[in-house]
Image 1 (cartoon, rainbow, N blue to C red):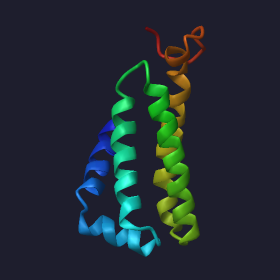
Image 2 (cartoon, rainbow, N blue to C red):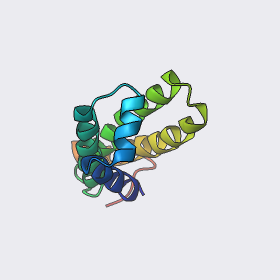
Image 3 (cartoon, one colour):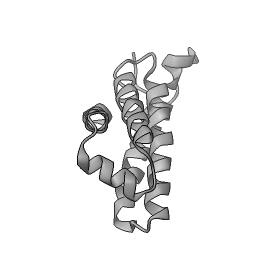
Length: 114
């Protein structure tokens, strides 16, 4: 689910869509930040697909969702806070659940089995 959401959104940002540019301008971010976030989303969305590095992709998305939530809160866009919260919690679970595969530590309760 994370890949299906973040890779297309990242590609949309990397394409420089006018809608995305307008949003980032309204929030006070520049075009460079738009492209950086787009690249970050595509990279994290792809990392989530590879079990060995899925926890890193999940952690990247958690950081991004914290930034998105902060941006919405600072701009008083309260109804928009649900999406970053939900996706951030899902990304946090992926980061935690796949951590044993990235670190080589023993299997933890609730983590996917090999």
